[in-house]
Length: 98
View 1 (cartoon, rainbow, N blue to C red):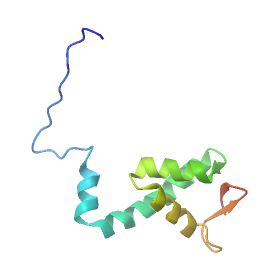
View 2: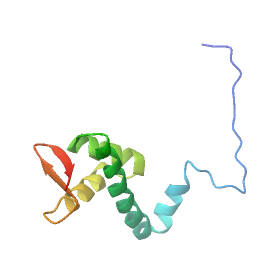
View 3: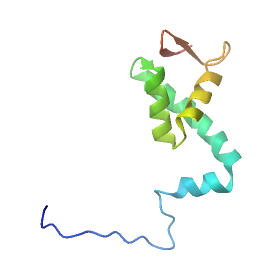
View 4: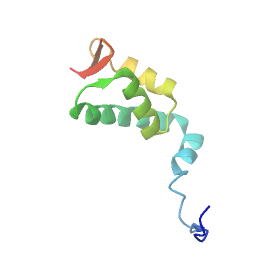
């Protein structure tokens, strides 16, 4: 145990807490949040693919974490956006951009 002083952050009541702002949006307008999350999912996946191959598992867990969506929602987005005419494909467990 260290003797470092305890640090307590006080949030300005007029400012929304950035750590929970998206949670409030999810609760107030789930349809709007989900539509935005799906767009951000595609952008995130494009960014990940720019760095090289991405496994299906990586795509799901990275999107789940970054977008604050469930892994099941990330799976649904990945399946939808890897349809035959969509922008991504999946082969041998690897996601690729078409």
